[in-house]
Image 1 (cartoon, rainbow, N blue to C red):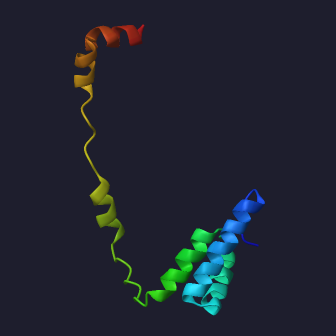
Image 2 (image 1 turned 90 degrees about the vertical axis):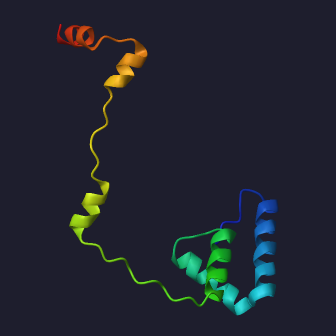
Image 3 (image 1 turned 30 degrees about the vertical axis):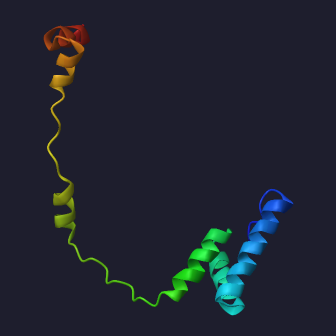
Length: 103
């Protein structure tokens, strides 16, 4: 079932919202959107509204991007940042810090 909320007021609000969507877009489309939402594991009015309105847009799905694995990895390869300047901001002498860590 659709999520009716924690109280009767929230459930009533959800039911009214769904009925208004059915009045605007047709109850057959609303019923199919509810079935589709439940089939996807979705249980709130926002999901039903999205599925209902998405059916109004008859735009074809764009083709998937074709990228080989090598070009994907190259896009995300970056040099490591230089962090020594942060020590200078904190007033830490790197040589003293290295000596303390080594002890």
